[in-house]
Image (tube, rainbow, N blue to C red):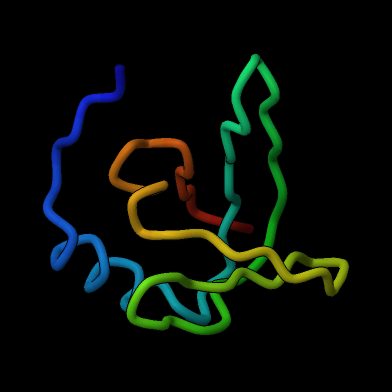
Length: 77
C-alpha cells in the first residue's frame, strides 16, 4: 500500500511551479516496470497534467500519481 504524504492542493501548486523546467521523470508503471525519461511539464489542468518528452511524445498523469509516489521528478540537465 502506498503512503500518502501530501494533500492534493499542495501537489498541484508544486507541479505548477515545475511547469516549463527541464526535468528527469521516473514513472512506476507497476509490476517492476520503471520508465525514466527527460521532458518538461507542458500543461496543468484541474485533474491532470501533461509532460512533453524530449522526443516530442506527450504523456498525461494525474496528481494522485504524484501523491502516491508513482511519478517522481528530478532536476534535469
